Image (cartoon, rainbow, N blue to C red):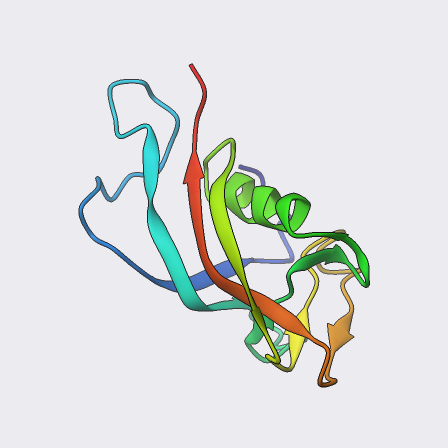
Length: 123
């Protein structure tokens, strides 16, 4: 996982704690992550998005569901999303695609986030 020297991305989520605290795709570790559950926030030290909810679309209105869940998992050291569920009516949300320069905020009734995301690895 790589981060820009000027931007720090922090994912804050409630999750089950039945897995190792080191999330990665080492086959000796757990092959499936703990479940990241609502609320899943995105924030950065500049408070550009003020800890908004993770939008269920990777880009504003595009690549919704799986692509956004996969990106969340990859940014947390996993390969892809094994399972996820959408939570409608959540606002404001922020897209994770092109973080942070291309991210967009959704602050309308049709916005949505994730009820949960479970990540995993293939070996």
